[in-house]
Image 1 (cartoon, rainbow, N blue to C red):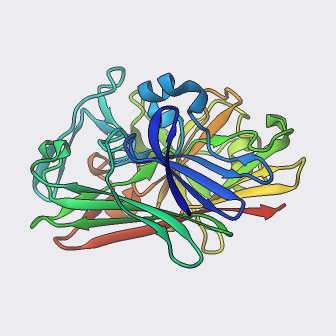
Image 2 (image 1 turned 180 degrees about the vertical axis):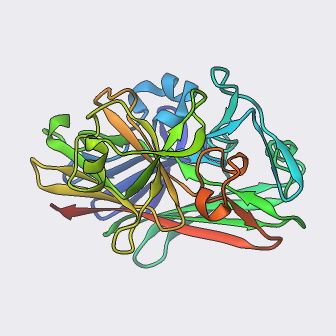
Length: 328
């Protein structure tokens, strides 16, 4: 069968297989896609929690592809948009901010699975209304669906958000994507360099919120944009604008020993990046696409700068991301 119901670390899981590719989704654990592998070459692209499920329960953002709605930090958990005030729980005591939204720990119902010719797929969806815990903080009826599809070309992610309420709704989305370094058996972290379509770096305050000013890129960051550098060249918890190249907004992680590139093409509607490498620890790093900059509705910046989006009643927002492999 193209989609198999199984368990992963004792948790209900759905395993998709297409050719040499395999992906594993945990619907009950934040709808997190915790594994993407090339089983023939033994490439494991995503940082998996299988050997550390206890830590995954404590900190799921360190594994897989957590779904962040809204992404990253919001000052004191408060903002106002289109005349509506929002109060989010302050869940990062060190900064007194709200961080990472409501859905990366939620149980996601499966609304579709199977194959349709060239792809094997699973679709999950949250339908938010007054009965949903998120509604108390985000008082809108809306739906968000995430489809993961495997083909011989790699992994595709399609997100669709629909505002079912009668008022404009903030639409702020990101992914805390955790990538293994190395992803290939027999390679070492020192075999790897990456590039990303970063533009300018936002200055962050001691509360890790944008000041509205830019900082110059250092020499290493310039190599992120042009040429490539180790994901661990320095500790990174950095926030950037996205600057697409040749119509693509992407991160490319290259194994120089094998001459193989993992491409993460995140789509043009993700207007900003966070790049975090866990203090340059040398095991994984997170190139995190976001539609909006951190704390967007509180920055006072124009929406076309902050990336802040308001969905009109009945309006739909959609975007696609892809993972695929190329020869270097």
